[in-house]
Image (spheres, rainbow, N blue to C red):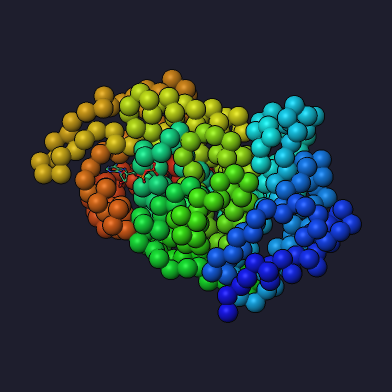
Length: 379
Ligand code: ADP
C-alpha cells in the first residue's frame, strides 16, 4: 500500500506547533514529497523561533515514521535569517540568510565559537570522521574517496563511506550497489556492506533526478540523518565524500559534521589549484584540520607501455601544499585502469590489489592513518 500525501498531512495535523495551532495550520510547511514510502519536506520558521521548533520537527518526524509503509522520513528545520539582522551578524562563519540545519539548533554556540566538535556531537562507535573534498567537480574526488577507504581497509581499519555528494551521488555507480538499505529494529538504516566497507549514499534512497530537489534547505538535514540515523556500528574511520565546491552548502556541512580532518583532492592544473586553495580556506574557517592534499590525475601513464608524461605540468599540488604548510599525501596518475574499474563498479584497489595504483592509495591511507592515530587509539 503506497503512502499518500494526505496521510502525511493527517498525521501532521495531530502535531501541535509553538504557535498554538496544529502544524498543518501554522503556515510553515514546504511542499511534501512522497516517493515510494520516503517522505521529505521542510518546516520553515524564523531564526529567532528556531529553538522552539526543534522539538516539533522531531515530533513531526516521529508521526510520519509511524505511518504504515513509510520507510524514510527526512524533515528539515530551516530558519531564515532576516538580511542584516542581529542573528546574521552574530555568526559570521554561517551563510547569511542561509540554511540552519536541525543539528545546529540542538547545539547553539556563541559567536565565533572555535571547534566544530564543540558544537557537534561525535557519532557513537565512530572514532574519526574525515571529509574528502574538492574545490570543484570532476577532479576525481569520489574515485579517490572510495579507493582511499579501501586503502585504509587494507591497513586493517574498520572503514565506512558516506556519499554526501547530494547533488550527484556517484557511489552507487562506483561500487555497483543497487540495493536499498533496510531498517533495523531501532528504525536506523543499515549501511550496505561491500568490499568490507559499510557504505551509505543518498543515491541508495532516491533516484538521481529526485536528488535534485534536495537543493538548499534539505541538504544538511539529509546528511545529518545519514550520519546519525544509520547504524554505522563500530568504525575506525568514516570517510565522507563531500559535495564538490566551497559554497554555502559545503561550508555548513564542514561546520556541522564532527570532522577530525579533511583531505583536498586537486588536479595539477592551475585552475583546480585555485579551487583547492578555496577548499583549504573553507576548512580553516571552520577550524577543521586539513590532513593534506592529494594530486589526482597527476601525470599520464600509458596503459600500454607504462611511460609517464607530465602533461599537466605535474607537481603543482605538492608545491602548493608546501607553500601552505599542509601535508602532501601523494600523487595518483591519470590511468585508464583507474577510470574503467571505477566506472564499472570495481574500484582499482579491490580489483587490482597487487597493482601499482592500489599501492599508491594504500600509501596515502597510511599517511592519513598516521595523522588519525590519536583518535583511533583513543577509541
Ligand atoms: P568527482 O567526484 O571529483 O566529480 P569522479 O571521482 O566522479 O570525480 O571522477 C570523474 C571521472 O574521472 C570518472 O570517470 C573517473 O573514473 C575518472 N577518474 C578519476 N580519477 C582518475 C584517475 N586517477 N585516472 C583516470 N581516471 C580518473
